[in-house]
Amino acid sequence: MKRNNHTLFLYTFITVFGGILTGLYITGISGAVPFIPDHFGLTDTLFGFILGILIIGCLAGAFAGNIVNSKQGKKRCLSSQLFYSH
Image (cartoon, rainbow, N blue to C red; front, side, top):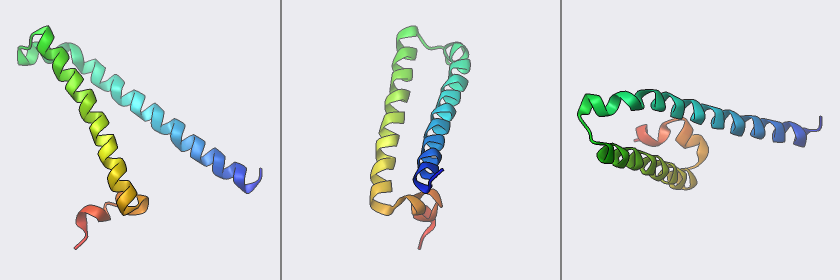
């Protein structure tokens, strides 16, 4: 393979792997879903509202992370230097 093909393969692998991890995370949450209303005594309407808020929070976190990432740089964000710098 040429160097460009290796880079493309690496980016594709990272993207697909991230999608798989996101799917596993959502599956883990869905395993807990049947037990949450009983534990907290929620009605179906309130439980649906809370799940919707969780999804909106995930989207807001992704957008906020993108803004910080664009301003501070990927390397700094991934290495946690953003939060511990003096």
